[in-house]
Length: 103
Image 1 (tube, rainbow, N blue to C red):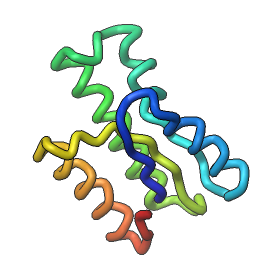
Image 2 (image 1 turned 30 degrees about the vertical axis):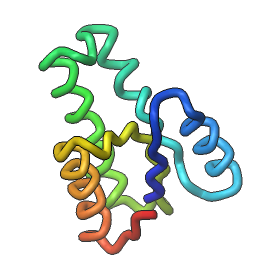
Image 3 (image 1 turned 90 degrees about the vertical axis):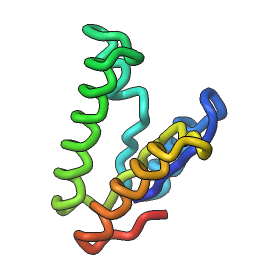
């Protein structure tokens, strides 16, 4: 897994698209789930956040145990939030527990 992180609107998706072109990795950019869920619930709501996290977790689970070469994921990581550190660690542990490496 390649984790591309940074503030909003800095080009994470664009970098991910270019990286996907030169690797065998699939791009999973953060707005894929946000855009889906926001058709029903605002992302800032309890329901919206729960669904975004649920979809992402399910995709990570399936990719981590599949025969896919890997995945590129973009994420807005707030370094000052303990919850964001915990989330990144949780996702990293999932891939690492199945023999993957997180970059």
